[in-house]
Length: 114
Picture 1 (cartoon, helix red, strand yellow):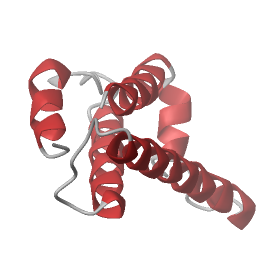
Picture 2 (cartoon, one colour):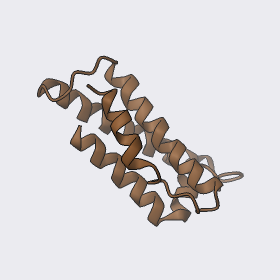
Picture 3 (cartoon, rainbow, N blue to C red):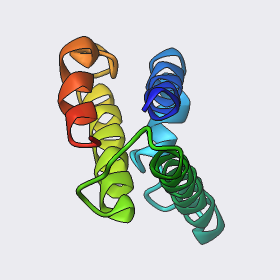
Picture 4 (cartoon, helix red, strand yellow):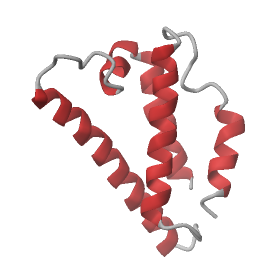
């Protein structure tokens, strides 16, 4: 659980500190861009989701987690949450931090892991 939390905090914290890259990662500036760039952004999210799956599976094997949900579904939910927070950041003109609400929201997300 701790590693999952760390991964999400790092990604959201990075997004907060790098608005330009966040615009890129959310696809906000990709209109008319090359297909190669779109593919690279897609790979970023795929790799992040794969990393989360691996961490969740390791947690299950170590007895730290008892995912009642499938690992793939849980990893996908965490990616959707992360992407949504970054989308809000971009749509707000970089006023609404991706870390906003984290202390209240992480316990809710964590509770779905156990």
